[in-house]
Image (cartoon, rainbow, N blue to C red; front, side):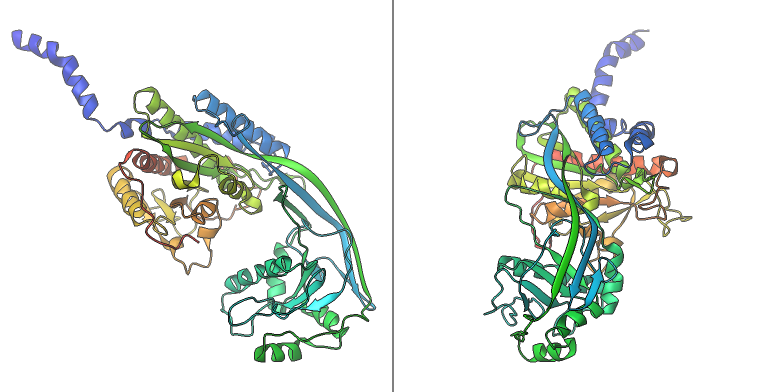
Length: 513
């Protein structure tokens, strides 16, 4: 009897010791549940949200829901924000109609020429034309040197005098920066003549509308992409052809001096513009002894809205990531309330404008709430709720995640992440999309990339694309919450380690861009 009495007397101490020995991160990771993820996602992907298009009512409603959750958890809105919202203004533009004429020929928008969105396209355009070669500016080949460009409309070829990559995506991406050369030199606009294969590949991505961030110092620069036929017609007004001009440019970077003065140029543009508001929604959890250092956890809460009366709910893209951020915020808040506040501060941030060019995250890194030099990493979650075709029917169908970017800037981050996964999650980490040669280029296509460009280590979590990507059929009924929960817990354990380890991950590579 005395033996049992002794055990009972010491039982509270034994239990207390056992609790102290248990890894607290496991306890709070287990608060992330499929039930709670489903509850958040059912609201965020409901028809009421109207597809969460940036700058529209549904996106604002989703933002208010996220703010409410951050408030409920006791997170704070940093002083530089407007009640949990980092506000930014955007310009919505739409081309109602547009025609360009050379001589006796008229050309129409999207059939013969296009732009990527309507922002910057003028209602009126006039001026002299100048031929700018390929628009290349480099040490060994400079088309702009000595060229009078001020207040003129530059006409250029896509491509290069040298043999280009067979990868069409890489070729096209190399052409976009050339407009900046002409803008910096004082040109009024640029018209780029595309080869047939490039025009046919690019025109499906053209749009009559666009939504871009604006600021007091933002300047618009009209860029038109012309079909090969339209380009030949334009050059023909100066009695020139692309073939002879390209032959000359292969010998010398100095563009031929073409006489466009007798050309009859006409331009009719009906462009509608309006200003709209958007925001990144942020919840801040202050750390303890290393509170000046900040870990950021991101997902985008916008989607593509409504098209032809159909709602694109975006359950996976990226309702899954947004719901996960809310669950991670709750887990860390519970830990803080129970005596396990992280050493470093954590900023939970759901950004908008991802679908129109990563604009919300770009706005953050250009107007950071906390100094970027104090930002230790960004963990970005975008589409973790489905199984892609490569894993359907396999043994790892419910237990994989694509990991992108962990080793691009920091060997420390990559090694730590592998160790955390082995200890806590045991999920198959698939690095196929981390390959620089991957044609999908996913590393450059979500919000983490804006942080990587600022040399901030990142990890991008992703489970792949699927047949419902950017379709009205991306709905909550198809989300696999069991797998989503596993991945969310892996992100939590990774964030816990980053927030509490003695040293921040070292940046020892220069491949962030």
